[in-house]
Length: 310
Image (cartoon, rainbow, N blue to C red; front, side, top):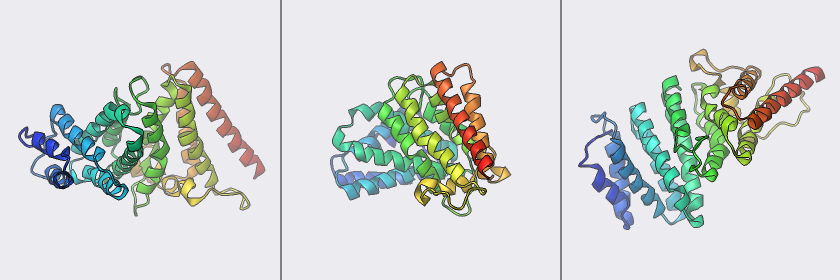
């Protein structure tokens, strides 16, 4: 990625133009700018902020559903035009910083298209990490982007809009499952990838946020892991393919992709242990600790009951 201060300001200006043809051309130029392999220095923070403000308003002015869908996909794919993973993640950090800062100013008529943009970026990020073979450094950097002050899953920053954190939680497992549909995939390290949600669940001061994480991350994940148990009764009602996250469950590991994918029973046990360990940390709020222990206990009891039935 380039660091030239002469290129970014006019590009940002053209991205925010009121003329659609000018904006479209600027997006194409931006893709070329970001993919230039001869430029390997990340943009300085100030220039990244200018660039992302231009991109934000470029999307703001897209006003037809098909145009919005195409542009959301095109903008998310910019992540994958950057060959250097750290530079791509630096670009992604600019996206989240800008979105958190601008979110409360989005009117209700435009909100749905920004929800769509978030979904596209979550999916593209998983494909970026998959391309990088889920290296620990890349996953940790992504987690830092999400949980830093000003990040969409930061547990301590009251300025972060709750609706944004909720939407990330809503789409996270589904988009990870889609990303893992490629063949042959490198197994996703779920302990690492889901870590921001364990931390947010442990430390959030909002009961609604904890409840949402349990309903959109914990419950469906453990239900899917249970539904794919090999010892399950053939008469058991299975989840639909869409809700079972079959790609995710069959192509995941705990923390080291080089060890290969592991079975659903082992994966479930490891993630339950992670919930218990995070709940036990000193930084976990007491009320959240009790809820996380309850998740652990309920899942263990369900596991014991299943074993007894068999």
